[in-house]
Length: 319
Image 1: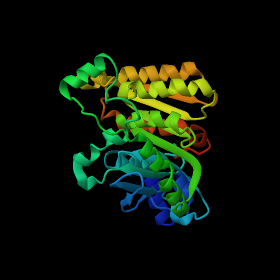
Image 2: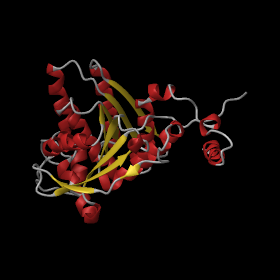
Image 3: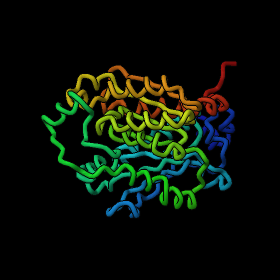
């Protein structure tokens, strides 16, 4: 990064062309911004919900000066919690030539609603099924501290919103490439797992971070079993990660985070779906929160490793 800034400074003085000293991909695009352009968050009312969702959009740094270019799209659940981390991660990786530019779209509750609004994710991320918790001892543990009354499970409605009018309208306004990533963390990972089998056509790649994948009485595992009876193909690139320290937190044990993630990884590998690739990683020393940027960064680098290999280093090479 030091070389990149030095190159820009020398170029501004007319002493040397920036790409000659350092070669971040943005340096070779005249008029490109230094970072992504974050638009004002919108509130969008859908047909599926009686309340509006916040939709935040960040456009690539080169978007305005490359009108004929299309870009992959990363859809980030839990907009008020995860969107800014996603934008910062993409900015740094693009600057380091570790991935191509992409559009980032966050979807969730309006930030002004506070954590009460974020709490609606429990309904929106829950697939059809019974209850909230994972089965067996996990269910008993959750019930002992947080007994959930019956509540609507609205994952189908959220999936319809994401894959229906929202995507149609935004793709008409912005230049989407045919390359869509879904990022979901915790209960968002549960939703992503459900989407993988309920609508396998919607996303090309998925990031499941510390997924509560066994919640709702193993609903995702049950759906996967049904899916496997009639399908041998699943052309999706998956990245699944969790923090090693999550095993030291009682409630995360009750949620089955580590065991559920491990069982999901094993199931996907052993099922051997045609076209499916899966990369997993457990991060020593990271908890449910600190692991988020590491999973996001590693997943994007994994997904776009071939594209990154075709980008030159940002650093001058040894003479």
